[in-house]
Image (cartoon, rainbow over all chains, first blue to last red):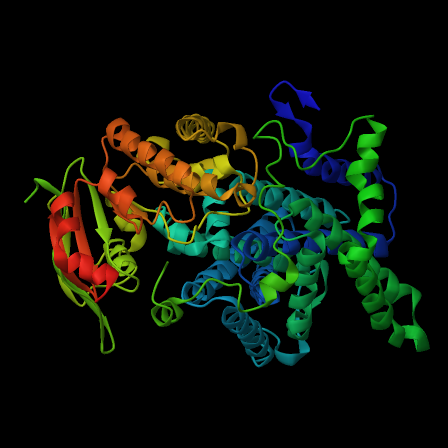
Length: 379
Length: 256
Protein backbone atom coordinates (compact mmCIF):
# COMPACT_ATOMS: atom_id res chain seq x y z
CA UNK A 1 0.00 0.00 0.00
CA UNK A 2 2.49 2.58 -1.09
CA UNK A 3 1.86 5.71 -3.05
CA UNK A 4 5.34 6.99 -3.51
CA UNK A 5 6.46 8.19 -0.11
CA UNK A 6 2.88 8.52 1.03
CA UNK A 7 1.82 5.52 3.09
CA UNK A 8 -1.90 5.01 3.26
CA UNK A 9 -1.86 3.14 6.54
CA UNK A 10 -0.36 6.14 8.29
CA UNK A 11 -3.25 8.32 7.30
CA UNK A 12 -6.08 5.81 7.27
CA UNK A 13 -7.60 7.22 10.47
CA UNK A 14 -7.71 10.76 9.08
CA UNK A 15 -9.28 9.47 5.91
CA UNK A 16 -11.94 7.38 7.63
CA UNK A 17 -12.90 10.19 10.02
CA UNK A 18 -12.78 12.68 7.16
CA UNK A 19 -15.12 10.58 5.02
CA UNK A 20 -17.60 10.02 7.84
CA UNK A 21 -17.62 13.74 8.60
CA UNK A 22 -18.00 14.58 4.93
CA UNK A 23 -20.99 12.27 4.53
CA UNK A 24 -22.85 13.71 7.50
CA UNK A 25 -21.91 17.30 6.68
CA UNK A 26 -23.04 16.68 3.14
CA UNK A 27 -26.44 15.65 4.42
CA UNK A 28 -26.74 18.66 6.70
CA UNK A 29 -25.31 21.28 4.37
CA UNK A 30 -27.39 20.25 1.36
CA UNK A 31 -30.49 20.87 3.38
CA UNK A 32 -31.14 17.31 4.46
CA UNK A 33 -32.32 16.78 8.00
CA UNK A 34 -30.69 14.78 10.70
CA UNK A 35 -32.79 14.41 13.80
CA UNK A 36 -31.51 15.96 16.97
CA UNK A 37 -30.57 12.70 18.60
CA UNK A 38 -28.26 11.78 15.72
CA UNK A 39 -26.60 15.18 15.83
CA UNK A 40 -26.19 14.90 19.56
CA UNK A 41 -24.74 11.41 19.23
CA UNK A 42 -22.23 12.63 16.64
CA UNK A 43 -21.12 15.44 18.94
CA UNK A 44 -20.78 13.01 21.81
CA UNK A 45 -18.73 10.60 19.73
CA UNK A 46 -16.38 13.41 18.69
CA UNK A 47 -15.98 14.52 22.31
CA UNK A 48 -15.23 10.95 23.40
CA UNK A 49 -12.65 10.47 20.68
CA UNK A 50 -10.84 13.67 21.65
CA UNK A 51 -10.85 12.59 25.30
CA UNK A 52 -9.66 9.08 24.56
CA UNK A 53 -6.88 10.14 22.20
CA UNK A 54 -5.63 12.79 24.60
CA UNK A 55 -5.74 10.43 27.57
CA UNK A 56 -3.87 7.78 25.63
CA UNK A 57 -1.00 10.25 25.39
CA UNK A 58 -0.55 10.03 29.17
CA UNK A 59 -1.71 6.48 29.88
CA UNK A 60 -0.62 4.67 26.75
CA UNK A 61 2.52 6.49 25.71
CA UNK A 62 3.88 8.07 28.87
CA UNK A 63 2.72 5.08 30.90
CA UNK A 64 1.29 7.04 33.82
CA UNK A 65 -2.13 6.31 35.19
CA UNK A 66 -4.36 9.38 35.25
CA UNK A 67 -7.81 9.17 36.80
CA UNK A 68 -8.60 12.86 36.56
CA UNK A 69 -9.16 13.38 32.88
CA UNK A 70 -12.77 14.44 33.42
CA UNK A 71 -11.46 17.13 35.76
CA UNK A 72 -9.55 18.80 32.94
CA UNK A 73 -12.62 18.50 30.78
CA UNK A 74 -14.66 20.10 33.55
CA UNK A 75 -12.34 23.11 33.64
CA UNK A 76 -12.65 23.49 29.89
CA UNK A 77 -16.41 23.08 29.93
CA UNK A 78 -17.03 25.65 32.67
CA UNK A 79 -14.61 28.28 31.46
CA UNK A 80 -15.47 27.80 27.82
CA UNK A 81 -19.17 27.85 28.62
CA UNK A 82 -18.82 30.94 30.75
CA UNK A 83 -16.91 32.78 28.05
CA UNK A 84 -19.52 31.75 25.49
CA UNK A 85 -22.30 32.99 27.72
CA UNK A 86 -20.50 36.30 28.32
CA UNK A 87 -19.80 36.79 24.63
CA UNK A 88 -23.31 36.01 23.51
CA UNK A 89 -24.68 39.57 23.83
CA UNK A 90 -21.82 41.11 21.84
CA UNK A 91 -20.61 38.44 19.43
CA UNK A 92 -23.71 36.35 19.21
CA UNK A 93 -23.28 32.62 19.01
CA UNK A 94 -21.12 32.40 15.91
CA UNK A 95 -17.84 30.71 15.10
CA UNK A 96 -15.81 33.61 16.50
CA UNK A 97 -17.28 33.26 19.98
CA UNK A 98 -16.77 29.52 19.71
CA UNK A 99 -13.13 30.01 18.82
CA UNK A 100 -12.53 32.37 21.74
CA UNK A 101 -14.26 29.96 24.11
CA UNK A 102 -12.08 27.15 22.76
CA UNK A 103 -8.88 29.09 23.35
CA UNK A 104 -9.92 30.02 26.90
CA UNK A 105 -11.10 26.52 27.83
CA UNK A 106 -8.09 24.87 26.30
CA UNK A 107 -5.69 27.30 27.96
CA UNK A 108 -7.26 26.95 31.39
CA UNK A 109 -7.17 23.16 31.18
CA UNK A 110 -3.57 23.28 30.01
CA UNK A 111 -2.62 25.35 33.06
CA UNK A 112 -4.29 22.73 35.24
CA UNK A 113 -2.31 20.13 33.32
CA UNK A 114 0.92 21.86 34.28
CA UNK A 115 -0.20 22.03 37.91
CA UNK A 116 -0.93 18.31 37.92
CA UNK A 117 2.17 17.57 35.88
CA UNK A 118 4.46 18.94 38.56
CA UNK A 119 3.59 16.33 41.22
CA UNK A 120 3.58 13.79 38.43
CA UNK A 121 7.33 14.33 38.19
CA UNK A 122 7.78 12.97 41.68
CA UNK A 123 4.97 10.44 41.94
CA UNK A 124 4.45 7.24 40.06
CA UNK A 125 1.84 4.62 39.53
CA UNK A 126 -0.82 4.34 42.21
CA UNK A 127 0.24 7.50 43.99
CA UNK A 128 -0.07 9.62 40.89
CA UNK A 129 -3.41 7.98 40.16
CA UNK A 130 -4.62 9.12 43.59
CA UNK A 131 -3.42 12.69 42.99
CA UNK A 132 -5.17 12.90 39.63
CA UNK A 133 -8.28 11.35 41.12
CA UNK A 134 -8.25 13.96 43.89
CA UNK A 135 -7.74 16.71 41.34
CA UNK A 136 -10.82 15.62 39.43
CA UNK A 137 -12.94 15.56 42.57
CA UNK A 138 -11.62 18.93 43.76
CA UNK A 139 -12.42 20.61 40.46
CA UNK A 140 -15.89 19.09 40.51
CA UNK A 141 -16.61 20.30 44.03
CA UNK A 142 -15.16 23.73 43.38
CA UNK A 143 -17.52 24.37 40.51
CA UNK A 144 -20.40 22.85 42.43
CA UNK A 145 -19.93 25.32 45.24
CA UNK A 146 -19.61 28.48 43.21
CA UNK A 147 -22.31 31.08 43.53
CA UNK A 148 -25.19 31.14 41.08
CA UNK A 149 -23.91 34.30 39.35
CA UNK A 150 -20.42 32.99 38.60
CA UNK A 151 -20.60 29.37 37.55
CA UNK A 152 -24.14 28.46 38.38
CA UNK A 153 -23.38 26.43 41.49
CA UNK A 154 -25.17 23.15 41.93
CA UNK A 155 -27.80 24.04 39.35
CA UNK A 156 -25.19 24.07 36.64
CA UNK A 157 -23.98 26.75 34.27
CA UNK A 158 -26.42 27.54 31.48
CA UNK A 159 -24.54 27.68 28.20
CA UNK A 160 -25.65 28.70 24.75
CA UNK A 161 -26.00 25.53 22.72
CA UNK A 162 -24.64 26.10 19.28
CA UNK A 163 -27.85 26.88 17.45
CA UNK A 164 -26.82 25.67 14.04
CA UNK A 165 -26.90 22.03 13.07
CA UNK A 166 -23.26 21.89 12.25
CA UNK A 167 -21.54 21.90 15.62
CA UNK A 168 -20.56 18.30 14.91
CA UNK A 169 -18.58 19.44 11.88
CA UNK A 170 -16.47 21.69 14.11
CA UNK A 171 -16.25 18.85 16.59
CA UNK A 172 -14.89 16.45 14.00
CA UNK A 173 -12.47 19.05 12.68
CA UNK A 174 -11.19 19.30 16.25
CA UNK A 175 -10.95 15.50 16.35
CA UNK A 176 -8.72 15.64 13.30
CA UNK A 177 -6.61 18.39 14.89
CA UNK A 178 -6.22 16.35 18.07
CA UNK A 179 -5.32 13.29 16.08
CA UNK A 180 -2.79 15.18 13.99
CA UNK A 181 -1.09 16.74 17.01
CA UNK A 182 -0.92 13.55 19.07
CA UNK A 183 0.06 11.38 16.13
CA UNK A 184 2.68 13.76 14.76
CA UNK A 185 4.13 14.17 18.22
CA UNK A 186 4.33 10.45 18.82
CA UNK A 187 5.90 9.82 15.41
CA UNK A 188 8.75 12.21 16.07
CA UNK A 189 11.87 12.18 18.20
CA UNK A 190 9.83 13.71 21.00
CA UNK A 191 7.38 10.84 20.91
CA UNK A 192 10.29 8.45 21.06
CA UNK A 193 11.55 10.22 24.15
CA UNK A 194 8.11 9.89 25.77
CA UNK A 195 7.90 6.15 25.06
CA UNK A 196 11.48 5.78 26.29
CA UNK A 197 10.42 7.29 29.61
CA UNK A 198 7.58 4.78 29.77
CA UNK A 199 9.83 1.84 29.00
CA UNK A 200 12.63 2.72 31.39
CA UNK A 201 12.77 6.07 33.08
CA UNK A 202 16.23 5.60 34.60
CA UNK A 203 17.73 4.56 31.28
CA UNK A 204 15.95 7.43 29.52
CA UNK A 205 17.47 9.89 31.96
CA UNK A 206 20.91 8.35 31.55
CA UNK A 207 20.51 8.59 27.78
CA UNK A 208 19.99 12.32 28.05
CA UNK A 209 16.21 12.55 27.81
CA UNK A 210 14.86 15.51 29.73
CA UNK A 211 12.25 13.60 31.70
CA UNK A 212 10.83 16.69 33.40
CA UNK A 213 10.18 18.43 30.11
CA UNK A 214 8.51 15.49 28.42
CA UNK A 215 6.33 14.49 31.35
CA UNK A 216 5.07 18.05 31.63
CA UNK A 217 4.58 18.22 27.88
CA UNK A 218 2.50 15.04 27.84
CA UNK A 219 0.38 16.11 30.80
CA UNK A 220 -0.17 19.60 29.47
CA UNK A 221 -1.08 18.54 25.96
CA UNK A 222 -3.38 15.86 27.25
CA UNK A 223 -5.11 18.33 29.56
CA UNK A 224 -5.38 20.95 26.82
CA UNK A 225 -7.26 18.57 24.55
CA UNK A 226 -9.48 17.49 27.41
CA UNK A 227 -10.25 21.22 27.80
CA UNK A 228 -11.20 21.40 24.13
CA UNK A 229 -13.50 18.44 24.62
CA UNK A 230 -15.00 20.30 27.57
CA UNK A 231 -15.73 23.40 25.51
CA UNK A 232 -17.37 21.22 22.89
CA UNK A 233 -19.42 19.62 25.62
CA UNK A 234 -20.59 22.99 26.90
CA UNK A 235 -21.62 23.98 23.39
CA UNK A 236 -23.40 20.72 22.76
CA UNK A 237 -25.47 20.92 25.96
CA UNK A 238 -27.72 23.58 27.42
CA UNK A 239 -26.20 23.36 30.87
CA UNK A 240 -22.86 22.26 32.24
CA UNK A 241 -23.32 20.36 35.47
CA UNK A 242 -20.31 19.48 37.54
CA UNK A 243 -21.80 16.18 38.67
CA UNK A 244 -21.20 14.87 35.16
CA UNK A 245 -17.44 15.17 35.51
CA UNK A 246 -16.99 12.80 38.41
CA UNK A 247 -14.79 9.82 38.95
CA UNK A 248 -17.05 7.62 36.86
CA UNK A 249 -16.53 9.68 33.77
CA UNK A 250 -12.75 9.60 34.16
CA UNK A 251 -12.93 5.84 34.44
CA UNK A 252 -15.13 5.66 31.37
CA UNK A 253 -12.48 7.51 29.36
CA UNK A 254 -9.83 5.22 30.78
CA UNK A 255 -11.92 2.22 29.74
CA UNK A 256 -11.96 3.54 26.18
CA UNK A 257 -8.18 3.80 26.16
CA UNK A 258 -7.61 0.41 27.76
CA UNK A 259 -10.07 -1.40 25.52
CA UNK A 260 -8.55 0.21 22.46
CA UNK A 261 -5.15 -1.06 23.48
CA UNK A 262 -2.59 0.98 25.38
CA UNK A 263 -0.62 3.18 23.06
CA UNK A 264 -2.81 2.34 20.10
CA UNK A 265 -4.42 5.54 18.85
CA UNK A 266 -6.66 3.93 16.26
CA UNK A 267 -7.86 1.43 18.82
CA UNK A 268 -8.73 4.25 21.20
CA UNK A 269 -10.71 6.01 18.49
CA UNK A 270 -12.73 2.94 17.62
CA UNK A 271 -13.43 1.99 21.21
CA UNK A 272 -14.34 5.58 22.13
CA UNK A 273 -16.85 5.73 19.29
CA UNK A 274 -18.23 2.28 20.10
CA UNK A 275 -18.61 2.82 23.83
CA UNK A 276 -20.28 6.19 23.35
CA UNK A 277 -22.63 4.75 20.77
CA UNK A 278 -23.40 1.82 23.03
CA UNK A 279 -24.11 4.00 26.04
CA UNK A 280 -26.38 6.31 24.10
CA UNK A 281 -28.25 3.45 22.46
CA UNK A 282 -28.72 1.65 25.76
CA UNK A 283 -30.09 4.86 27.24
CA UNK A 284 -32.63 5.25 24.45
CA UNK A 285 -33.64 1.60 24.16
CA UNK A 286 -33.93 0.82 27.83
CA UNK A 287 -36.33 3.42 29.15
CA UNK A 288 -38.88 3.45 31.90
CA UNK A 289 -38.58 0.56 34.31
CA UNK A 290 -35.86 -1.03 32.23
CA UNK A 291 -33.54 1.97 32.70
CA UNK A 292 -31.95 0.27 35.69
CA UNK A 293 -30.63 -2.38 33.32
CA UNK A 294 -28.52 0.12 31.37
CA UNK A 295 -25.48 -0.24 33.54
CA UNK A 296 -25.94 -3.98 33.75
CA UNK A 297 -25.85 -4.39 30.00
CA UNK A 298 -23.00 -1.93 29.64
CA UNK A 299 -20.96 -3.87 32.17
CA UNK A 300 -21.78 -7.18 30.54
CA UNK A 301 -20.69 -5.93 27.15
CA UNK A 302 -17.44 -4.61 28.61
CA UNK A 303 -16.75 -7.93 30.30
CA UNK A 304 -17.36 -9.81 27.07
CA UNK A 305 -15.01 -7.50 25.17
CA UNK A 306 -12.27 -7.86 27.77
CA UNK A 307 -12.59 -11.64 27.87
CA UNK A 308 -12.63 -11.83 24.10
CA UNK A 309 -9.49 -9.74 23.86
CA UNK A 310 -7.49 -11.38 26.60
CA UNK A 311 -8.65 -14.90 27.35
CA UNK A 312 -5.94 -17.40 26.42
CA UNK A 313 -8.61 -19.93 25.45
CA UNK A 314 -9.80 -17.66 22.66
CA UNK A 315 -6.33 -16.95 21.30
CA UNK A 316 -6.64 -19.41 18.44
CA UNK A 317 -9.93 -17.92 17.40
CA UNK A 318 -8.54 -14.38 17.59
CA UNK A 319 -5.49 -15.23 15.53
CA UNK A 320 -7.66 -16.80 12.87
CA UNK A 321 -10.35 -14.19 12.60
CA UNK A 322 -8.87 -10.85 13.58
CA UNK A 323 -9.22 -7.87 11.32
CA UNK A 324 -5.62 -7.89 10.14
CA UNK A 325 -5.83 -11.51 9.00
CA UNK A 326 -9.13 -10.94 7.23
CA UNK A 327 -7.77 -7.92 5.40
CA UNK A 328 -4.67 -9.87 4.46
CA UNK A 329 -6.83 -12.72 3.18
CA UNK A 330 -8.68 -10.27 1.00
CA UNK A 331 -5.39 -9.06 -0.33
CA UNK A 332 -4.16 -12.65 -0.64
CA UNK A 333 -1.10 -11.91 1.38
CA UNK A 334 0.08 -13.62 4.52
CA UNK A 335 -0.16 -11.33 7.50
CA UNK A 336 2.93 -11.63 9.63
CA UNK A 337 2.94 -8.93 12.28
CA UNK A 338 6.21 -10.18 13.77
CA UNK A 339 8.16 -9.32 10.70
CA UNK A 340 8.45 -5.73 9.62
CA UNK A 341 10.34 -5.06 6.46
CA UNK A 342 10.62 -1.32 6.59
CA UNK A 343 11.45 0.38 9.80
CA UNK A 344 9.21 3.30 9.04
CA UNK A 345 6.20 1.17 8.39
CA UNK A 346 4.87 0.00 11.70
CA UNK A 347 5.27 3.03 13.86
CA UNK A 348 2.06 2.44 15.75
CA UNK A 349 2.91 -1.11 16.60
CA UNK A 350 6.25 -0.23 18.03
CA UNK A 351 5.08 1.28 21.29
CA UNK A 352 3.40 -1.98 22.17
CA UNK A 353 0.60 -2.19 24.60
CA UNK A 354 1.44 -2.31 28.24
CA UNK A 355 -0.86 -4.92 29.62
CA UNK A 356 -3.51 -3.67 31.96
CA UNK A 357 -2.26 -5.42 35.07
CA UNK A 358 1.17 -3.99 34.46
CA UNK A 359 -0.17 -0.47 34.56
CA UNK A 360 -2.33 -1.12 37.56
CA UNK A 361 0.18 -2.93 39.74
CA UNK A 362 2.93 -1.45 41.86
CA UNK A 363 5.76 -3.87 41.62
CA UNK A 364 6.55 -3.56 37.93
CA UNK A 365 6.91 0.18 38.09
CA UNK A 366 10.46 1.46 38.29
CA UNK A 367 11.69 2.07 41.78
CA UNK A 368 11.36 5.56 43.09
CA UNK A 369 14.25 7.41 44.63
CA UNK A 370 13.74 6.06 48.12
CA UNK A 371 13.51 2.48 46.90
CA UNK A 372 16.78 2.86 45.11
CA UNK A 373 18.56 3.76 48.25
CA UNK A 374 17.11 0.78 50.04
CA UNK A 375 18.05 -1.59 47.28
CA UNK A 376 21.55 -0.27 46.96
CA UNK A 377 21.03 1.80 43.89
CA UNK A 378 20.63 1.49 40.18
CA UNK A 379 22.26 -1.69 39.09
CA UNK B 1 43.65 19.72 35.55
CA UNK B 2 42.30 19.26 32.09
CA UNK B 3 44.87 16.64 31.19
CA UNK B 4 42.52 14.17 32.82
CA UNK B 5 39.18 13.36 31.26
CA UNK B 6 37.81 12.36 34.62
CA UNK B 7 39.13 13.38 37.97
CA UNK B 8 37.40 12.63 41.24
CA UNK B 9 38.39 14.33 44.45
CA UNK B 10 37.64 12.54 47.71
CA UNK B 11 34.36 11.36 46.27
CA UNK B 12 32.22 9.69 48.89
CA UNK B 13 28.67 8.94 49.88
CA UNK B 14 27.04 7.48 52.93
CA UNK B 15 23.55 6.08 53.29
CA UNK B 16 22.71 6.67 56.92
CA UNK B 17 25.63 5.11 58.79
CA UNK B 18 26.85 3.06 55.86
CA UNK B 19 29.77 4.56 54.02
CA UNK B 20 29.21 3.11 50.59
CA UNK B 21 32.12 4.99 49.10
CA UNK B 22 34.76 7.03 50.78
CA UNK B 23 37.61 9.23 49.58
CA UNK B 24 37.71 7.80 46.10
CA UNK B 25 40.26 9.54 43.92
CA UNK B 26 40.35 8.36 40.35
CA UNK B 27 42.19 10.05 37.51
CA UNK B 28 41.60 8.90 33.97
CA UNK B 29 43.61 10.16 31.03
CA UNK B 30 42.20 10.53 27.58
CA UNK B 31 41.88 7.33 25.53
CA UNK B 32 42.52 5.13 28.52
CA UNK B 33 40.61 1.98 29.29
CA UNK B 34 40.32 2.15 33.03
CA UNK B 35 39.09 -0.70 35.20
CA UNK B 36 37.21 -0.47 38.46
CA UNK B 37 37.29 -3.78 40.29
CA UNK B 38 36.56 -5.11 43.72
CA UNK B 39 34.62 -7.79 45.55
CA UNK B 40 30.83 -7.76 45.69
CA UNK B 41 29.44 -4.81 47.59
CA UNK B 42 32.69 -2.86 47.34
CA UNK B 43 30.87 0.18 45.99
CA UNK B 44 31.69 -0.01 42.30
CA UNK B 45 28.21 0.62 41.00
CA UNK B 46 27.79 3.30 43.66
CA UNK B 47 30.71 5.12 42.08
CA UNK B 48 28.99 4.86 38.70
CA UNK B 49 25.80 6.24 40.21
CA UNK B 50 27.79 9.11 41.70
CA UNK B 51 29.46 9.85 38.38
CA UNK B 52 26.12 9.90 36.57
CA UNK B 53 24.54 11.98 39.35
CA UNK B 54 21.93 9.39 40.25
CA UNK B 55 23.28 10.00 43.76
CA UNK B 56 24.56 13.24 45.18
CA UNK B 57 27.95 12.75 46.80
CA UNK B 58 28.11 13.54 50.54
CA UNK B 59 31.77 14.45 50.24
CA UNK B 60 34.09 15.45 47.45
CA UNK B 61 33.44 16.33 43.86
CA UNK B 62 34.46 15.30 40.37
CA UNK B 63 35.52 16.93 37.15
CA UNK B 64 34.97 16.00 33.54
CA UNK B 65 37.69 17.46 31.35
CA UNK B 66 38.34 20.09 34.01
CA UNK B 67 34.71 21.09 34.47
CA UNK B 68 33.01 20.44 37.79
CA UNK B 69 30.05 18.10 37.38
CA UNK B 70 28.76 17.72 40.91
CA UNK B 71 25.09 18.49 41.42
CA UNK B 72 23.86 18.24 37.86
CA UNK B 73 20.87 16.12 36.91
CA UNK B 74 21.45 12.74 35.21
CA UNK B 75 20.33 14.00 31.83
CA UNK B 76 22.56 17.09 32.08
CA UNK B 77 25.49 14.85 32.95
CA UNK B 78 24.79 12.90 29.82
CA UNK B 79 24.70 16.08 27.77
CA UNK B 80 28.05 17.07 29.26
CA UNK B 81 29.56 13.83 28.04
CA UNK B 82 29.24 10.89 30.42
CA UNK B 83 27.26 7.94 29.09
CA UNK B 84 26.73 4.65 30.85
CA UNK B 85 25.40 1.14 30.55
CA UNK B 86 23.74 -0.75 33.37
CA UNK B 87 24.62 -3.92 35.22
CA UNK B 88 21.19 -5.42 34.63
CA UNK B 89 20.41 -4.28 31.13
CA UNK B 90 18.02 -1.37 30.85
CA UNK B 91 16.86 -1.08 27.29
CA UNK B 92 13.65 0.44 26.02
CA UNK B 93 12.15 -3.00 25.65
CA UNK B 94 9.02 -2.14 23.74
CA UNK B 95 10.83 -0.11 21.13
CA UNK B 96 12.71 -1.40 18.11
CA UNK B 97 16.49 -1.65 18.13
CA UNK B 98 16.93 1.29 15.79
CA UNK B 99 14.64 3.46 17.90
CA UNK B 100 16.61 2.62 21.01
CA UNK B 101 19.69 4.09 19.38
CA UNK B 102 17.70 7.05 18.06
CA UNK B 103 16.72 7.95 21.61
CA UNK B 104 20.44 8.16 22.28
CA UNK B 105 20.74 10.69 19.46
CA UNK B 106 17.90 12.73 20.92
CA UNK B 107 19.88 15.53 22.48
CA UNK B 108 22.52 15.86 19.78
CA UNK B 109 22.33 19.48 18.50
CA UNK B 110 22.86 18.23 14.94
CA UNK B 111 19.36 16.73 15.03
CA UNK B 112 17.67 19.63 16.74
CA UNK B 113 13.99 20.05 16.05
CA UNK B 114 11.47 21.56 18.43
CA UNK B 115 8.20 20.00 19.52
CA UNK B 116 6.26 22.54 17.46
CA UNK B 117 8.29 21.76 14.36
CA UNK B 118 7.50 18.09 14.79
CA UNK B 119 3.80 18.64 15.32
CA UNK B 120 3.54 20.95 12.33
CA UNK B 121 5.75 18.62 10.28
CA UNK B 122 8.08 21.37 9.17
CA UNK B 123 11.03 20.44 6.92
CA UNK B 124 13.45 20.37 9.83
CA UNK B 125 11.52 17.50 11.37
CA UNK B 126 11.98 15.30 8.32
CA UNK B 127 15.59 16.32 7.96
CA UNK B 128 16.33 15.48 11.59
CA UNK B 129 14.47 12.17 11.45
CA UNK B 130 16.27 11.11 8.31
CA UNK B 131 19.67 12.08 9.63
CA UNK B 132 19.00 10.37 12.98
CA UNK B 133 17.92 7.17 11.28
CA UNK B 134 20.99 7.14 9.06
CA UNK B 135 23.30 7.75 12.01
CA UNK B 136 21.57 5.09 14.10
CA UNK B 137 21.94 2.56 11.30
CA UNK B 138 25.61 3.44 11.04
CA UNK B 139 26.09 2.77 14.75
CA UNK B 140 24.16 -0.47 14.50
CA UNK B 141 26.35 -1.57 11.62
CA UNK B 142 29.43 -1.06 13.76
CA UNK B 143 27.95 -3.33 16.41
CA UNK B 144 26.70 -5.86 13.90
CA UNK B 145 23.08 -5.24 14.81
CA UNK B 146 21.84 -3.83 11.55
CA UNK B 147 19.96 -6.99 10.62
CA UNK B 148 17.94 -6.85 13.82
CA UNK B 149 17.19 -3.16 13.66
CA UNK B 150 13.45 -3.68 13.38
CA UNK B 151 12.97 -6.27 16.06
CA UNK B 152 11.94 -5.23 19.53
CA UNK B 153 14.83 -4.74 21.90
CA UNK B 154 13.43 -7.29 24.36
CA UNK B 155 13.56 -9.99 21.68
CA UNK B 156 17.32 -9.72 21.19
CA UNK B 157 19.60 -12.37 22.67
CA UNK B 158 21.47 -11.33 25.78
CA UNK B 159 24.81 -10.59 24.16
CA UNK B 160 23.21 -8.39 21.56
CA UNK B 161 21.24 -6.52 24.21
CA UNK B 162 24.55 -5.64 25.85
CA UNK B 163 25.90 -4.46 22.53
CA UNK B 164 22.78 -2.41 21.90
CA UNK B 165 23.12 -0.75 25.27
CA UNK B 166 26.67 0.25 24.39
CA UNK B 167 25.51 1.51 20.99
CA UNK B 168 22.81 3.58 22.62
CA UNK B 169 25.30 5.06 25.09
CA UNK B 170 27.70 5.88 22.26
CA UNK B 171 24.90 7.54 20.32
CA UNK B 172 24.87 10.30 22.92
CA UNK B 173 28.38 11.19 21.75
CA UNK B 174 30.06 11.02 25.16
CA UNK B 175 33.58 11.93 26.22
CA UNK B 176 33.63 9.17 28.81
CA UNK B 177 31.87 5.85 28.56
CA UNK B 178 31.00 3.94 31.73
CA UNK B 179 30.45 0.21 31.28
CA UNK B 180 28.96 -1.65 34.23
CA UNK B 181 30.01 -5.31 34.01
CA UNK B 182 29.89 -5.52 30.22
CA UNK B 183 31.09 -9.15 30.22
CA UNK B 184 28.61 -10.43 32.80
CA UNK B 185 26.90 -13.59 31.62
CA UNK B 186 29.06 -14.00 28.53
CA UNK B 187 31.02 -17.09 27.58
CA UNK B 188 34.81 -16.86 27.04
CA UNK B 189 34.40 -16.52 23.31
CA UNK B 190 31.92 -13.66 23.65
CA UNK B 191 34.13 -12.03 26.26
CA UNK B 192 37.04 -12.04 23.86
CA UNK B 193 34.81 -10.52 21.24
CA UNK B 194 33.74 -7.84 23.69
CA UNK B 195 37.34 -6.94 24.51
CA UNK B 196 37.94 -6.40 20.82
CA UNK B 197 34.81 -4.27 20.57
CA UNK B 198 35.86 -2.12 23.50
CA UNK B 199 39.30 -1.53 22.01
CA UNK B 200 37.64 -0.72 18.72
CA UNK B 201 35.35 1.79 20.42
CA UNK B 202 38.34 3.48 22.00
CA UNK B 203 40.17 3.79 18.70
CA UNK B 204 37.25 4.47 16.41
CA UNK B 205 35.36 6.92 18.62
CA UNK B 206 38.45 8.36 20.30
CA UNK B 207 36.80 7.34 23.57
CA UNK B 208 37.84 7.08 27.17
CA UNK B 209 36.33 4.10 28.94
CA UNK B 210 35.79 3.30 32.60
CA UNK B 211 34.53 -0.20 33.23
CA UNK B 212 33.50 -2.39 36.12
CA UNK B 213 34.37 -6.04 35.75
CA UNK B 214 34.84 -9.22 37.73
CA UNK B 215 36.60 -11.30 35.11
CA UNK B 216 40.29 -10.91 35.95
CA UNK B 217 41.53 -12.25 32.63
CA UNK B 218 39.35 -9.77 30.83
CA UNK B 219 40.54 -6.87 32.97
CA UNK B 220 44.24 -7.73 32.83
CA UNK B 221 44.16 -8.05 29.07
CA UNK B 222 42.19 -4.90 28.44
CA UNK B 223 42.69 -2.19 31.05
CA UNK B 224 45.58 0.24 31.13
CA UNK B 225 45.03 1.16 34.74
CA UNK B 226 42.97 -0.13 37.60
CA UNK B 227 41.40 0.99 40.83
CA UNK B 228 40.53 -1.69 43.34
CA UNK B 229 37.75 -0.90 45.76
CA UNK B 230 37.03 -2.74 48.98
CA UNK B 231 34.36 -1.71 51.47
CA UNK B 232 33.97 1.61 49.71
CA UNK B 233 37.60 2.64 49.94
CA UNK B 234 40.43 2.46 47.45
CA UNK B 235 42.59 -0.56 48.15
CA UNK B 236 45.07 -0.20 45.35
CA UNK B 237 45.47 1.93 42.27
CA UNK B 238 47.72 2.21 39.28
CA UNK B 239 49.14 0.14 36.46
CA UNK B 240 47.10 -3.00 35.85
CA UNK B 241 49.91 -5.50 36.27
CA UNK B 242 51.27 -3.99 39.46
CA UNK B 243 47.82 -3.76 41.00
CA UNK B 244 46.90 -7.35 40.25
CA UNK B 245 50.12 -8.56 41.87
CA UNK B 246 49.54 -6.49 45.00
CA UNK B 247 49.24 -8.89 47.95
CA UNK B 248 46.50 -6.72 49.51
CA UNK B 249 44.39 -7.09 46.39
CA UNK B 250 44.89 -10.83 46.23
CA UNK B 251 43.93 -11.02 49.90
CA UNK B 252 40.73 -9.03 49.32
CA UNK B 253 39.73 -11.27 46.48
CA UNK B 254 40.76 -14.66 47.75
CA UNK B 255 40.30 -13.89 51.43
CA UNK B 256 42.51 -14.98 54.27
